[in-house]
Image (tube, rainbow, N blue to C red; front, side):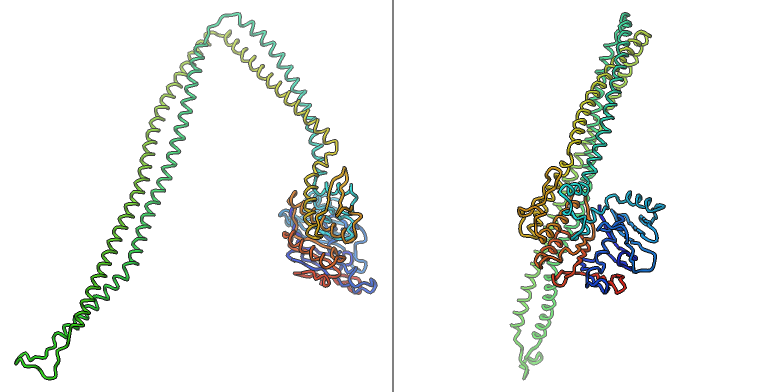
Length: 620
């Protein structure tokens, strides 16, 4: 049961003129009131804050949360029109319900955009109840619209009235009535079944006796025995069944092997892909590793060539005239030992880099060969498994052919025996046929009699059990259905009491046909006003949890009508914090209060209801 309220429209309802209020996604919404009507002599009281929630119950049930059904039109408005429209979703179905009070009572019901209204108010209410039988005022006042002084709040009922209300909310009263009807119908059905079975048994017994008399007369004539043929046929049938079982096993084994082959084919393809990937990765790693070495090699070669050219230049410089052999003045032959050493060092370094490159390439070749060998070994292993499985499949398929040939041969032999048996039976003519027919009839009657006897005994047992259930249900069975619900409420309320009041000395118990409520050793009626107020709210939230747990109930709004106005700030904080923690599924928590600022109630949004001097309220 999931209810999502979307919008409420009040038109000349109670103190309102015309107002439309969105109910979704309001968060913590404080509802304030200002009464500017001098005749009322009030600042906030009477402004119309509670009328919004009365409009919800009026739209769904035809009466306000206080039980008022008449004088609902605003007397200060001249227009002869008064209605309330409620838009909401119920278990994923969109509803628009408009209840009209003036100029005459009527009810309009729109379901998923389609008008389902009846011809008048009574017809409309019957239609609405057929669609929404669970949306009662008791439900609304118990778990959705929570307020002080409300006539339908749980604690305001007598102890026996509390039990009755809890039965309605938890649907146990419906279950009891439904079970009574079902059990009564079941008893009638079982009694009728026993009578019919007895009649069928007597009829079959008479037929059996007649047939046995007939058979005794037929057995006086000798007929040829076909028992040997029947034994042979039975023996063949046993072997046929065994061969069929063996064939089924072979088929299943072959299918399993083929499945494994398909899986191994995929594994082989994956091995190929993995091998390519691992080789590519080794190539990438090799390139990354060899790149700085080859770059260094190229740089060294370039530097060596440059140094060689410089050395040759210097070596070509001479201080001796090639013609006369005399020293050339002012010319000094340069010393090349330094550059020769540098050239030697560069060649050594080039050799070392070349060796590193060779080593790297050799390592790359080894790794690549290792990877290829491993990949090949993996593929060969998979290929070997595939080959083995295919050999197994081939062997099994040969066995299947042999079994099929053997099976066909036995089936043919069985058919030959059956024809032979038919030949003997035909030769026995009418007598043998009559004897066999009579035996079969007797066997059939005996089987049917046994079946009827077993059914009669079983049905009588069922009848005895259901009769005992009827006796049990006629006693006070309701208490048994409420046990889990009451235990849930008692446990959950203790948890909330600990949260709000600091103690969990709370009892919610069924005593006969009464539900007793006590806190801190005192009955609810003997608690102080503040304690009653807190216990009231705890009970209402606990019942809401019970409906969520046992009936999958949820709603997107929660209305707290002046429940915090007579509490101290700490108690108010505890309650608001508890609601925030325990009612996380609620989108909009409407808090109606005369003193929201003094109690510092947190809010995400605000509704301001103003009643003007003419006595007409509207939402600002």
